[in-house]
Image 1: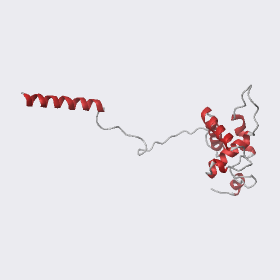
Image 2 (image 1 turned 90 degrees about the vertical axis):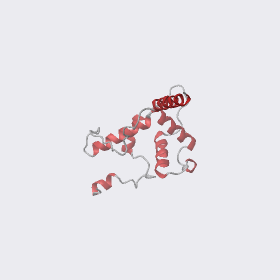
Image 3 (image 1 turned 45 degrees about the horizontal axis):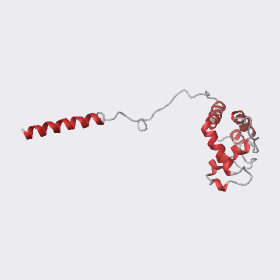
Image 4 (image 1 turned 90 degrees about the horizontal axis):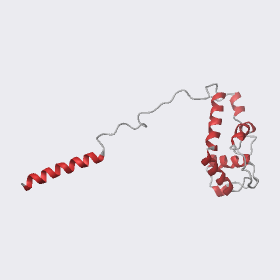
Length: 150
């Protein structure tokens, strides 16, 4: 429910785009982003801007080539999105933000209950395995053929 206190927490009017990270959100996420590899080139782009660009595309649904110019190049943003998906960084970020949100609501950090809907859970299949039925059908046919020929 929207209250006066909640509106202040979720106000994003001071940000450049509503999808940009606040300082508090960045403080939670920054330690989860892997550091640059040793021996390689130094990073030339700000990782906060990289995440802001990813969140911009995800929240607006715009095409990659329509990414505003103040963000890093779209090819670099796409490369980091693929890398972070592959190495699990995005999953760690999601889990950290999810647990922080649950704690802010006054709930346990970990959910204690799961619900499986009977329409989404697959039930037992009817009948036996396919190869057994085919073998039985061949045996019946061979008996029928042998009865006719005799």
